[in-house]
Length: 391
Image 1 (cartoon, rainbow, N blue to C red):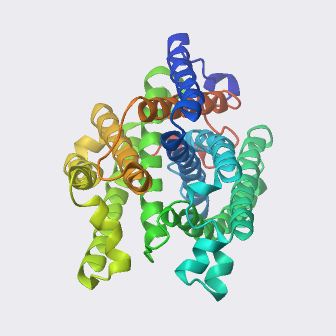
Image 2 (cartoon, rainbow, N blue to C red):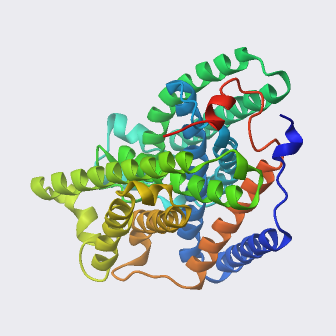
């Protein structure tokens, strides 16, 4: 088995399409920062956070497979590894926002904190210096783990040393633990604190559920595409697709459970400092999107992926993966944009341009990463077991 058997040469028209998307997104951002900055900065946060989450989802999937000792996913592991390459891009976008436009977070001002009566630890936590320092630590730790885990995996292609698998198991164990803590804090810092008077103790878990479900959907899209047009057509089978479909079904249900838990507990307690979040999103023009969010992210994938045959059907899996990714975009829109949009949802040229640019940039970065190593980890000792996997 040689690396030449698993090279990727994407069609020029495919690359050209995504380059056009990325260029359109870049042009939209440049124009928007001058013509509509009040809309562009939140949109830029949306795109950067979405890219960051997709990269983290890929890295978390790889780490989870190492920690659990799973062998079925070895044949498709290069796909989530390539997704992790979007981490630096999302981190760069977020860093620009944090340094150039910190006023996006309304609590970044000592006078505001004093007016709200924030004292002691809360006043220290809601301070610009500590906020930026925490953000730098989150991003640096994630990038360091991504570099170490992916580099070790690729080194194994040449040596085939089992010790490299054991090294990645140790790295992955540490990453899973650290990621579970840092991502919950980061999502609260960057997203929940856009509305600082509101809080939810399970907001980090809710964000993780959306992160991983959308990451699995993006992975399924890439795997099916590589199976149809690339070197994975002889190494990934319908059994692998079935497991991906099962994971999407499971984690979309987990997302729905956390979504309902958060809403139900806040509705039941009926505390003004908690209900303000849902009053804004579950009434008026936002109500339709609020209900659609639950339908797209859970009802549709749940009903479609329940039958075993649908999870093994590439066409169904692709369709549901696209639905899940659209649902994730809507979910992020509902988390980020309402504080900046007022009583009526706004979606125009600026939002559409950023969305297309995010898609294009994600695809280009992943395609580039896929071409930097064989599409299958040929040195992994568990690869033969994965190639002959039966669900």
